[in-house]
Length: 107
Image (cartoon, rainbow, N blue to C red):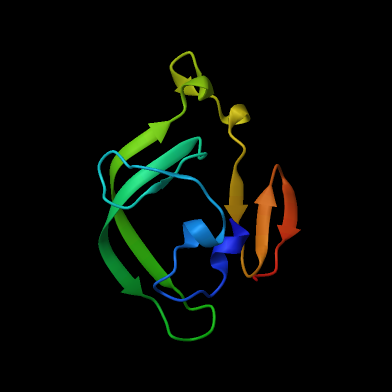
């Protein structure tokens, strides 16, 4: 995941650069990450610029067109969150993984 944050030429594939296997998506044209246990396929609704100041940011609104969930993640017809190896994005280079804070410098 972190490797795809590198600044590469716009005509280069992040998938190839980071050696990530792809699969066709179900409802949108862009490819999906094949190994991802949960995938959201979305289309862009709106981009809202909050501020040009440092840490001002942008809000991106998407419309979900399809959700893929790997079959083994279900327990009693619900996604078992304990089986999902989630990573959360924090500020700057920070992430959270299984309740632990981790920093990953961008390449």
